[in-house]
Length: 350
Image: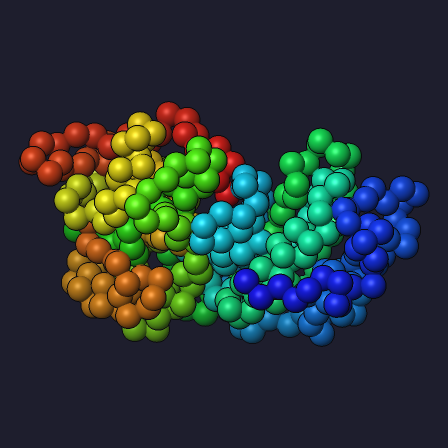
């Protein structure tokens, strides 16, 4: 993370104000300095720099996609990422699941009074760097400070706008019998990275979050003419939730092979220790793709050519129209229904 020294760039005297303070009276000098010298400096671009109540921007021809999400992950920093980069990656990936090229983000920070200024600066710089890597601009936002004990550090809300430049409609209802089911890499790392920090678990090798943007993989598939039926990011509820949601919306039966689903050994071990199923554990840089059967091998080749998709795998197929169902063929050849998780097993993971 490239976070320049806070004292070197910010005129807020950190020795005098080492923590975020409540801006009594509706704003004031400190809040103005926070906006101008923390968020303004980090996210500077021609649209944001107009300092107006709303952003004005041009969009290229095509259908617009829009999404919003809030991030309350605990802890704020974890192996492989932090709440700032996660907020960017999560929103960019949501846009990518409809085939959109991300363009702009808004962000709103809800900051707990007493948050160290240097912690805030690290989060903001991480968000700035993630947006730059993803080729998006943060063009508007908001900041609120809440009483100490009411915010758990910082919460972030992001809204993203992207452009869909093809005529393809990527939705669950496009899924057809015979379609191949692909995943873009190994599963379960994000949730286990968070839990390892929370529970103080030690493994031979550190489990790092898979948090990463996946839009370039999706855009490459579209440019190659891959017949994509549906895409779904594998966040809360993991692979099991995503497949069940798609099966229900499309009215199909999905069969997957347990032996084909990529899960690292250390993640398996962590899940066993905590009594979790890795297929129910959240990811932040993985997605499932339903593609026409004839395009499956070519799609895998394209996905594997990207760093974030190097571990892509074919894990199953759509077997027919029926009562919505996801069936898992175990390693010993027995079939069982893969249910959606009954509740959120790992709260505060995004």
